[in-house]
Image (cartoon, rainbow, N blue to C red; front, side, top):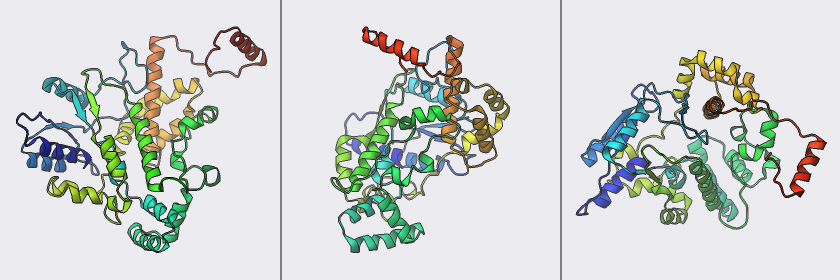
Length: 386
């Protein structure tokens, strides 16, 4: 819905220009995917704009395999080389059409009420002490969510309670296969950025917007700039003027019981095809990496027997092997953390092949070593980073 809205609005804006810029589209599809296939929806957009874009079939593309160029240093695990037919086709498309700007729909869910949660609206009413309206909205959302209204009220009040009292949710905790010492030392980094709401100051809905914006900023900051070919990524939904407008709108205008993206659907009526605007929420794509792990099971078992991350004190290989087995049989597992662990492992193996990487876990510094480091520091020498 986000990318389709960008395309349709861009066509509307440039339609009156004498020399409009060319807007090409690229669409990914997978006809074998039961819960995620974009072909019926991007076809409607192409019919409306009267122009067919590039279609890339991502069937049989493994999300679990992460490849690094052994002849080129990757400074971070995110600097993967384009691997697979889909990535090569996308690179060839940019080169052929000489595209230099890629418009991304990132931020649409967080800005326009794509996440169907009533908590920000209920928190606003709770802070303002508007009891009657709070009771009405609790009843409406309870019927929509099929949950007791008292549970929704507890969830709303719990947003203001410190983590030390309510604890960190399971889905925000570090993966269980990380070494306990490593997880404890880097707890602040591994725990998602999620401060608690405050009763005073800005409205809770605005605080939620600021938290979501900070999460998006951190995610975008982790992405590496494309090199071959070089192009710029722009985010229309994160435009400053647009965010100021969206954050000034009452929450009940953005999302309503049984109708997410309420304002967006009303504003873009007749501009974006109805089939796209009225589609159900797109399911999270978790089947593809699970299929990849199952199809290449022998490779992953061999890799998990001797892991660089295990030797460096980051991952517990036996626990990670159990997580892979759970994912293989379709059990509940943090699949995103599994694929990220595989990416870090592949990255370290590539570094080990290029350099003399020490695989011994860091040892605790003795008192004499600490004294030596302090003495070196007092002499104007920087100690070795921890």
